[in-house]
Length: 277
Length: 184
Image 1 (spheres, each protein chain N blue to C red):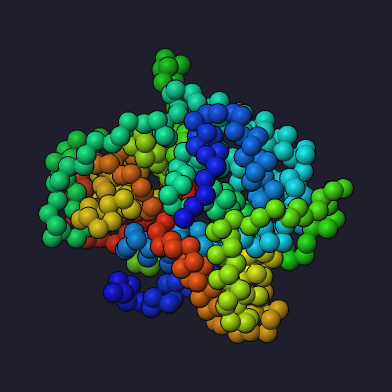
Image 2: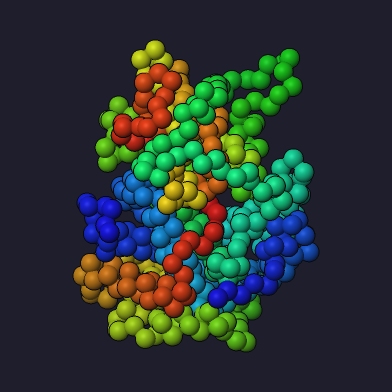
């Protein structure tokens, strides 16, 4: 069944093959992001194409013969790796591979629901605080949002995605949005860096983050509510992400504009999207 | 379906002794991938460094049930090289990096191709011409589809079709129809 009526299956595969072999230009990337937002299974299909390209590359290189790594580069890499491992074995940072098994997911959703349903009750617990990247106060021992961002970005298993306007249905007033989002499935924590999102009037509308979770594909809850937030500055803002329920394999992040307090089921278009690299 | 030496699991567990083994086992592979896309030695070295740091950070994500270690490492390396080339606003270079060769920097023929590589090569070699050459120019020479179209005097759409069909044949040979578990 073709769930993407605007593209034939062959055209979708052409896009995924291009992504695997030469990368995508910005317009192709936006198209890809929109496809994955519609159907997270596309992300796994894309990975299968990447794996095929990688395996074929290994085979072709090995038939021709590998070139030896230059000795000086090998020495530099050894030093870098040592630094990386020391950081990753810090008990505060080392999470991947040692984290406790995730708790079972609650069966909160009806099988008839179609994706955007999330636990309404969980919304009550959302508390999104927007930080500005200003200097740390002298009385606070806590790390600044920028420091927290950097620390999480360096943690094992953290995924990164770049924000871009969804040209396929987004409102042009969000066309200048840029930035990055990071999320660590082990810590279930993340941050967004955003620039160029219009300042919103929280009495009229709020931004809402959604996380497309590929581990939920086939379930009714593949899009996890990432919470509502406000933007009070058109400069760069750092906003924490708190998924209402677990997101173990985030593949796409998307921002919609909703009524104050957010919604359980979004009917609005995706304005800004970010696909995990 | 996959071969694992357990090296990435050891890296993920913080075993520093495994790092040198990873470099000795896969460093040449990553270097071979990077050097095909950059004229400048420093750029190629930065790409290798970038890719291997991503391997250290992503080692915990490796699942031997899904892909071989070499495929996992190559996938990360290819991603980083493609991203780096695109961020530089240019396409991969098409000429080999002869000027950056160091003494002794010659291909080293592996003693034996892995069983997975043998299957993949058999699938590529069985493709109808010119599909094997299109695949080789894309993956080994880092040419874009447009460059391959020009070089082989083939319509761009035909090149895209050859690459799609070729990769699907490789996927079938691998028996992989799911993701590789490779992190960003």
